[in-house]
Length: 126
Image (cartoon, rainbow, N blue to C red):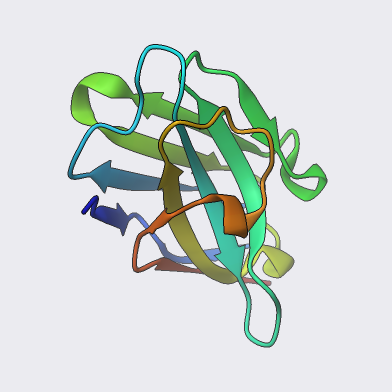
């Protein structure tokens, strides 16, 4: 069973930056398949996709983070990252790392990911 562990959350003021990390216990990617992504869930709201990256580095972003967040991965470390800049109060949420093998990141739908971390809290204040 793949285990995912997030880190890097915290509290920042609006306009600040945070870098989230996710360490996977096993390989997710093969040569042409595999997907890892970041999701978030605010209190009283549904979980939503933030960004994903496939085996060849193709990225996908939700419109609300384009130009502010950058997803990246380090295959050698089985790790995923999310650099978050220009943070806004509405970015406040629990952020989750997710993964799925044998897929190509066609969507940012939570139902398409089978492995999940426990989450790391991000709080952005005015």
